[in-house]
Length: 218
Image 1 (cartoon, rainbow, N blue to C red):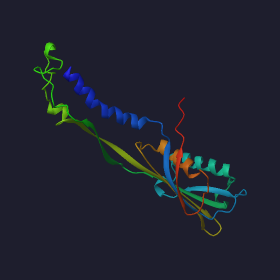
Image 2 (cartoon, one colour):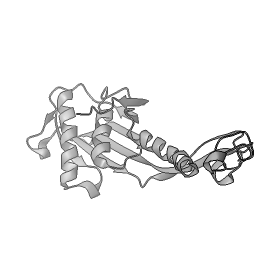
Image 3 (tube, helix red, strand yellow):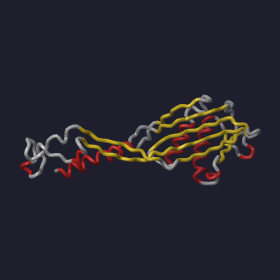
Image 4 (cartoon, rainbow, N blue to C red):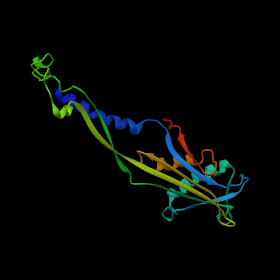
């Protein structure tokens, strides 16, 4: 019986962490945008990687398509000839290596005050020392139960810049940043793109917090 209680108590923080990682609370991000974009009127665009390490890859091409879809919904048109596009859209994304955070969970107060075979508690007839007077410092940690769990938090970023091709004048700068328990770009980047285009192009100089609805499960 004592073995069962120890396992149950020390498993609780782990279960809580699993629940945290899987809970449907939506995707939260901070977005800052600066813009002098003219009203969309069919201007053509081409999308390029703002980070040379991303250029030419199938992964970047996939995310560029997602950005292009959102630009098209806004009123811009993909250039048939990138060299003659009206706008150059520069996109970059990244996720860091994460940092460890520590969570302490527990309860306290009086568990060492009396369980033993010589007291009025239970357990004596079962051959276990679970009556009044018993105290297990390994289990109760000196009058209460405490456990420490660690987990990793990752910071992801998406930046987007829009230049007028004719004179390279900067018309838009935006950055979306989020913290999550996931470091998977296939999850993070599409969400960051959605956040970037929420109320696009936004009010210049304003930083806002955007929360996307949790993903619907099939």
